[in-house]
Image (cartoon, rainbow, N blue to C red):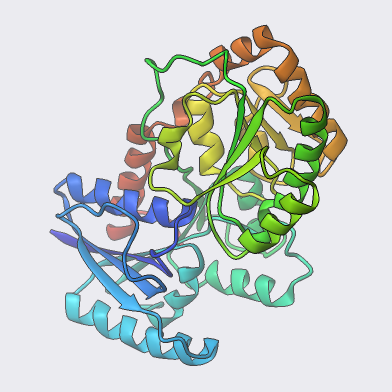
Length: 367
């Protein structure tokens, strides 16, 4: 039985990338074809907020709370020893953990798959970020991205080998067939880590406009992170304490989605929003800025939601108000929400991962 190690930098945080790492480990272990190991390189919490399958060999390294370079070289050495000791056949690095692939690659006995969940969205002026991505795309046997936009970015901008770059999207566990849309709801919802790139300053601006005309509605935000104190301050400045409600980070936040009228995403950048995918799977109309990558692959403008020109706060508020005032439009978009999700079904995406793993292990790819 082949041994696979999945590596994420910090499984102590709640977010799309760590969720993908845990889900992939769990599902691969359920196949009973591989021995699955899962490593959290630099865990910053005492307890992991995910349910990890008992078949998965989970390894957790606590944060060193040291300088970045010291942490990197210490963990890199430790990782190399772990891979040798466990006799790992293939390592899958998810997200920023991909930089640690340099500890192993090249190695004739061990195959490396790096997975990028962000691309260079809005980072092309950041030389450090560009160099990091350039290295990650080369220090592996295969490189997985989430959509064609990111693949093209790597090939055209970073001059990566097109044979190495493959597209495998994130999957959705369940595309709801028995969930009823609550047309009487007066609640808007957003799910995402409270960090600067998620555009919560824009959310507060939009919310302020909506609140003036529809104070009987409410906007719930699920998530936590370093931007929380700033957001609390912005909410207070706009006197929105009774309208924008910070619900904090919760496990399985997607299960909270039924009962909401619509899902709104205000991010400055996204590669592939799992929260947006979950909202569509639960039949919510969705609204997002049409940023460089991500939402445009999921939302069909005017059919199941709205794509707004980037950062046009007034237009986003107008589209939200359109849905607030038109219940029939909300119902129509709800009915259409799952119409383009077939390729994101779990069995479809998992079969793509199996195909990739088997072919990498058997060296059935051109290099």
